[in-house]
Amino acid sequence: MKIKFVLAALCACFLALSAAAQDGATPDFKDYAAPAYRGRAATLKLTTPLARNYRTRLREGARRALNFAGQYKLHTWSCGTGCLQMALIDAKTGNVFFPEELNGFIGCYYGSEPVNDLEEALQFQKGSRLIVMAGYPYSERGKDEPKKGLYYYEWTGAELKLLKFVRKSEDC
Figure 1 (cartoon, one colour):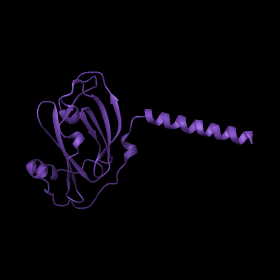
Figure 2 (cartoon, one colour):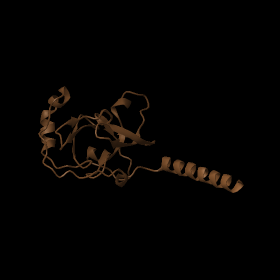
Figure 3 (cartoon, helix red, strand yellow):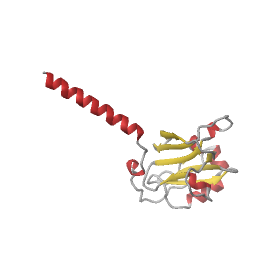
Figure 4 (cartoon, one colour):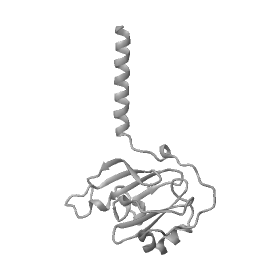
């Protein structure tokens, strides 16, 4: 009986340590794999006021190749100094998504190498649902001390889910 109790206690400790270790792990693109869409791209749907407002940018993005989460075209454009606007175009349905977290975000760079392109503050891959944003989202604008750092998001097919935030003390 004591052996079963000790084994159960050890298993519980192992599971708790494993969960704690995963909390500290940085999300990796390969852990959020997305199947590749091989069909024909659907007609772009400009059904919302925001989509109609950005119709020229969206039509430009719709002509590009798939570049995110297997079936999406992630298209970006500048919205001012250090600011980036983006949309996701679903090649299967033609629907357009404007994730609130990444629209009007301020890009920051935390590497040792200088960067010349604002889009480098946004990392994503064709076969992964993971997006990494370096900087801070629109919701942090105007705050005395915005939460600057690396934001790891998973695209669920309808919205972004924050997986992890890593605060960075360096300035933008």
